[in-house]
Image (tube, rainbow over all chains, first blue to last red; front, top):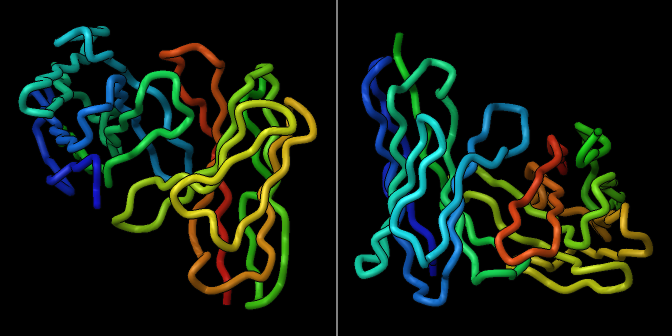
Length: 112
Length: 113
């Protein structure tokens, strides 16, 4: 049973516009959420995180929103750039746990 | 600062062969783990370690063995390779704080024929 779901396998946006990537989870024990970005032939790299005591976290062009009641989080990228084209993974854990649970990923393509 | 180093980058095995994927980190992280990534499956946890001498199973541990004799190294052993183990393997490490993030290596592409 998939505990972290990314229901959109792909997303295409124009350069300069907003990219919104979505993630749903089923395990109410999750209290720490992360987004990773992955380029082909490279390992995932950390992008941004949020703990369950917050509902928003910003880092430059990247903002993550958490809606605990809906068990939903989203990653906003504004403005989107061609270099943002990558696969984005949502991940969740029970805080302090070594066991990160990943979604299947969403491939973002930003068109010039 | 090298971070997390994995070797080899590519490997082809025949069914039944054994091999060890190497992973080393130079960040003095206590936590280390192995994930596999299959098409359309995301990353799944194989084994993890919370410190030297301590290992535990993740979501998909069958067919794999690990040990952690030092803080720096966390090798993954395939005991008898099967085609179902064809995948990309990622090693990762993190510090022991509550909200520490994982740092990943660049991966090993393994094909089992």
